[in-house]
Length: 184
Image (cartoon, rainbow, N blue to C red; front, side, top):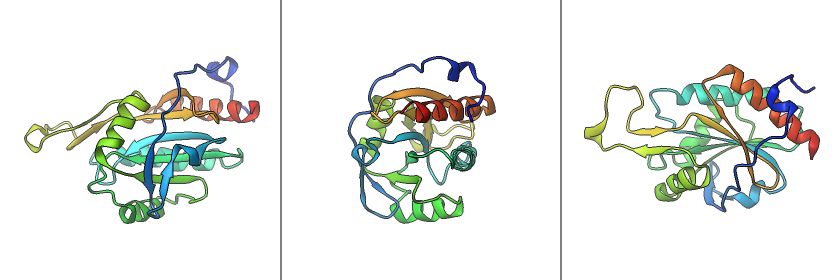
């Protein structure tokens, strides 16, 4: 059933295509945008040692996994912005700890520069790695990144950005995902 939402009642915006990327999933296998072709997907950005909002973002993704379980073809993707720490093994343990279904929720990592370029230029979101001396008491730690969840359609085009720290935004994301799934 579609949730009542102003976003779901009108056409979703088109923010452009996500570029090709080549990363590695939590099993150590190559993972690229081509693995998502023809599927509706939701991406978020985390790192497993995050001291601030990443645990909430992962909890939101766990909730989305349940809320979207009946919607065919939806893939969830958590991209680590800290590949030095988040090896495939670390991500595999993190995914298991959070009840991620391997069929519908992937965790990926890769080369630091490639990931940060993808976040900045592909998803058009913020990510910054601080020098140890730059760490301030803002709770974010060494890596500062966006809390946005990104909705991407089956053609690889960005259709919306949703704050992972806002329950109403998560409701809008679910409604928009259901609408895109119904329209495809």
